[in-house]
Each structure stands twice: as structure tokens, then as C-alpha cells.
Length: 363
Ligand code: IPM
Ligand code: MG
Image (tube, rainbow, N blue to C red):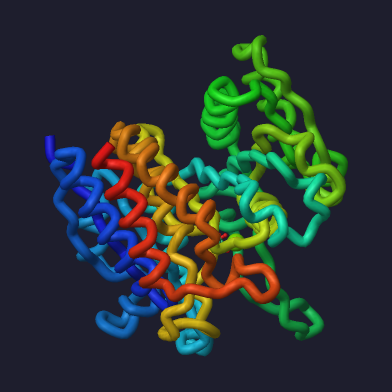
């Protein structure tokens, strides 16, 4: 069976890191005899420039046909002045919502080779392996009503709605508990149930779903405390599950524990396991076009794609091993280089991964 994969290179450093990733994908497919068709489409600023909208119909049609999507990054200052309905971020939110990619997996793993790159003391982060499961198609990001209006005394007012239904909470709870079973069997649900009704329901539903998983330990934490605990003692966590906005914030904090957001992949899954895979970093317009971005987060996103949507775990293992090899050899892009360590370019990093893969495949 041929896997249909859609590539959305996007904006900023997206195309640069995607080039390296596609070369890795092609190499792995050839070596393992994996039959895959790669198609391309536009999302975000690139789509606005070409078609006037961030998530064009043609992209939507291709995305709905695909078994998996791999995305670079979207956005940049060039499009910041546009009306909010056609900003690049709308494309990202649009595709997540259109495909019902409700389950966002954001692992934060510290590669022992990079312990020095973390802003925390090495002993606090050595061996860190936590997984944030962020609800991605609900909560305050999508709640209605939202918008701008004005008050009776003529002031401008902006408003959003923080809302979760039982079924939205349930499905992400199941995802988190199922994933915990493949790890250390612990789930920490993060909410603000001391203040917000939507998250009081969140906590209630988490407790209900937990009854179906007697082998998994569930704990609850308020989001402010969770932010503090992530910095104080991050290794206490196994799986963290939380809503859309809290997950956005906590996942950036967790990413930095590992030294570089340039290392972290993510997966966004629907109910059937189809998914979109993207690096946790953004489009990094400040370094776009310079050939210095770290392609490893996107390459590792491809590994997650093989594992979670395509059921090709040998491909995923090979890529992850190759990345480990490259780090062992001390090959570093600027974001993960410590002090005066020499820095390689985006394409040199990609080539090093492919070289490590060749060595892996001849064995
Ligand atoms: C992320 C990003 C997006 C989000 C933005 C670009 C809309 O920050 O994927 O974390 O807030 O979800
Ligand atoms: Mg974010």
C-alpha cells in the first residue's frame, strides 16, 4: 500500500528544514522499500502570497486525502499587518480544525549529549523524557462567541470564550491515558479548576475516564503550579494532558528545558490516527534564508510520522538512531552549540543525518 504524504513547507525557515527532511524521507523509503507518494501544497504566508488566503481549498482537498502531513512552519513579520482573518496562523488553526487534529503530542526529551545546552542545571534535566498532550481543536482558541465590540460607554472591548464539551475532554483524556500505558503509566492533568468552570468540567471528566485505566496513576495540577514545577523539577512528570491554551504555553517552557526548541518534533492526531507532523519551533524569520536553522526537529517529526500514522516503526527507529549518532559526533547547528563549539549549516546537518542513516542501513 502506498502512503500518501502531503508536504507543507510553509514560511521562514520552513522550506530550508523541509528540504533536508524530504531528502531523509526519500533515503529511508529507498532503503526500507517503503512505497510513498509525496505531494506538495501551500499553507500560511506562502499560500497568502500565491492565493490570497492562508489555507486554500486546494490545500484542504489534498490534506483530506493524505495519510499524513508534514509541515515546516508558518508566519512571519511580512504578513503581520494583514487582517486577522487571513493571517498565516489562521491557516494553521484552520487545518488543525478542518482535519479535527485534536490530539497534539509534544515530547520534551533531553538528549544526554545536549545537557549543557539547557538553561537548567544538568542534574535537573538529565534523562528528562516528558510528553505534553495538548488539546488542539477546542478551548479558548476556537470558542464562540469571540471578537471585538464596544461597551456602552464607548470603550473598545475584545472577548473570547473558554469552552470545552464533555466529548472533547474525553477523547483527549483517552489519548493521554493510552499513551501513558506505553510509558511510565502516569498522567498529570493541568487545569485551573479553582477558577474556571470549563476546567472544573475538565477535571471531572479526567477523573471519570481514569476509572477505565486503573493501571494509570492520575494526578491534577493547577496551571500556575505546573509552570513552576516544570522549571523546578521537570523529571517528576511522565504525561501531562491539558487544554489548548495552557498546552501552548507549557509546551514552549518544556521545550526550553531540553536546550533547544530546534530539537523538538510534534504530532497532531485525529481520531483515526491520521496526523500532521511539525517541529515545535516557529518560522524563525530572524534566521530564515541564512541556511543555519536546525533541521532536526522536522527530521524527528518525520520519524514520528512513520511511527504514529504510517505504522513504519523501523523507519522511525532508524531516523532517531541516526540523529543520536550525529549528536554523539558533536555535530551542532548554532542553536545547540555550546560556547565555542564549531557550528554546521542546515544542509551539513541534513547530510550528516543521511550519512549516519547510510551506515545504519549497510549493517
Ligand atoms: C503553536 C503555535 C501556534 C499555536 C500559533 C502559531 C497559532 O504557537 O503551535 O504552539 O498557538 O497553537
Ligand atoms: Mg505555541
